[in-house]
Length: 411
Image 1: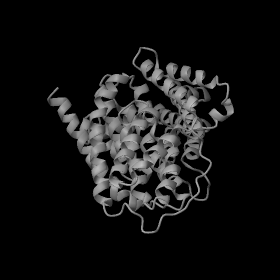
Image 2 (image 1 turned 120 degrees about the vertical axis):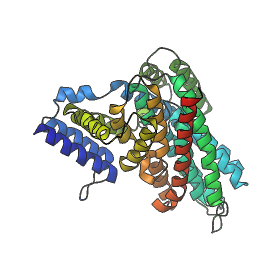
Image 3 (image 1 turned 90 degrees about the horizontal axis):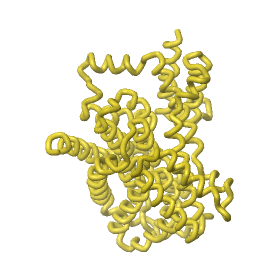
Image 4 (image 1 turned 30 degrees about the vertical axis):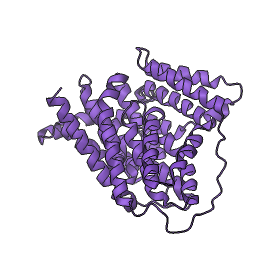
């Protein structure tokens, strides 16, 4: 009976996460996942202690530490300053798109894509509309490039952090394996967007006069402190010190500020994402307790579908990431991977991240960008995004497959 409860809770939770809501209730994806975790305990699938122990604390600490670092940059006005600096290229839209995509990709690889999209979108939207440009191709470029850039490092996005921690992957090896396909995918994405919007970079209306909102002013001291902290942290990631220890140590130092209050720094922590992670850990542990993942693997094997095959893994990850979003998909798929075969984990990191560009719900970065743009009257619908997202994802996945072949048969 317990196994039936676990299966039902899992299916309802993942269906709710995929849809993004439960009709009649004001629950979002985080709320749905949290209810699922609660039900796993209420119905006796897991004890309270088992539920707590199922949460991978090292992943949560790494995520938390990096969020504190990003708060430092947001309060120091670094993101706003960077976004405004690149607007000087707006006189040539094609060049501006290229610069924007490169900058967002690089920053996403270091400071996480969700934060980059959150900080860049308002500044870019207002600047583009005031310049009389069509903001849609550039905002889609922001979302797409931040996803692609984040695939190249363990700290680029939440699912890579999870993969890096659970797979015990080396920071340097991960970077060397994932960066070449990420770079090629970024180039491909730029050309796709450029081709689709080559005649639509300029807006149909005259330049709009939109007031900028209360963005953080640039503080050289605080931004420099954040840059130094980031450099030190990346150096520490190349040592044998556990990444989560390095991250929370740097976070602790940043909290010891003479001018920025602790409440202000912690106010930018994405507690919803952390809660989502904790809840999904519990939900996945619940189905693992009743051997559901192993049953799924046996079913797939019986139908000649080997999840350990890198090409099947790429396709399966891409599909599942666009059904339930890439973070929940990654949490489930990691249960099937071989801990000793690091290539499987690299492929999952690339495919699940690149898959986030396919449709709007594939990535949290997409949702952040488009929801924020809507506040300024810029609506980027499912079809508008898909006409870029689908070809970009197809190009990225083919590049990933090509990279797998090169790795297997040349090196």
